[in-house]
Image (cartoon, rainbow, N blue to C red):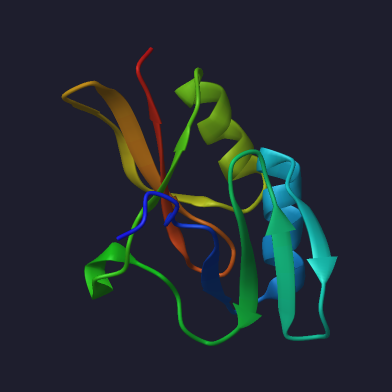
Length: 117
């Protein structure tokens, strides 16, 4: 494998594109480019990807990969998630190296947020 090979893009299923776009814009300041009614690309600090219209959701209970955000302030990030329609599915817990929690966004996709603080 080449040293230049790297993960470059991620695509996630999305039940409700408008709600999911609004959630990530409000909580994580993502920006978007629409490519028709069933696909949107997101742009973020460190990752680029897409959301595609689907009735499926990416959850670890079904074997999906877990995308993990870093935050220096877990409590504030959790409050922003809940205030914008996210659901905490695993409350803050300790693990070697820090603390984290898991949440789902309005389309049901699971993510985590961790901190070393």
